Length: 191
Ligand code: GRF
Image (cartoon, rainbow, N blue to C red; front, top):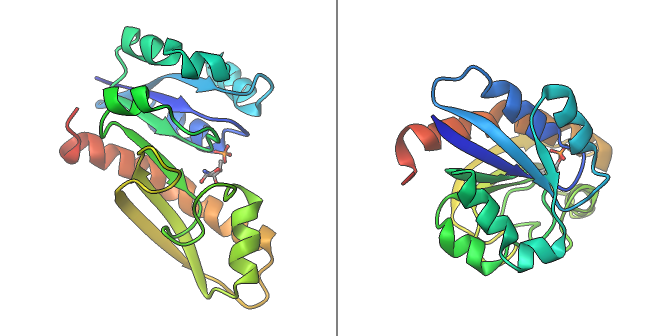
């Protein structure tokens, strides 16, 4: 049984979806959630689902406490789902190719520092894009630059607002993120 850890800073709808997908799953389960925000809504979602969620501050990420904790819990795969901090180098080195992220656009477009949440969808609409999508990728030391694992697209209408784009992205995320995690666990991941 592979153990998954999720890092999330916000609402946690992807975290909840992953927990549900992997509950009673033969391959893996979500062991715990870590948030860098004390009041993130993800904590409430996890409390409801009975999954431990921990608040760990900036210092805990920087001084190696988070890394030690993940190792103690024998985590196999770290999943970033709406996690806004840059992952520290020691964590990346120790979990090489075992940290993945979901980004709500078709990287390398609309990625990088500051490109998160509605900022992404606003930029996509402002650029007059005819499509957008989601990217699931390995995490390296720079925001949104690790090797791409999978991308899924959705068409945009000229009339789509950033809120419309967010809804389309949400649908793709709910449908595909757990499936990609499962595929990784089944055949491709060195875990
Ligand atoms: C998602 O759109 C994800 O792609 C992005 O941040 C959002 C997180 O939403 N990285 P939630 O916290 O999972 O509801």
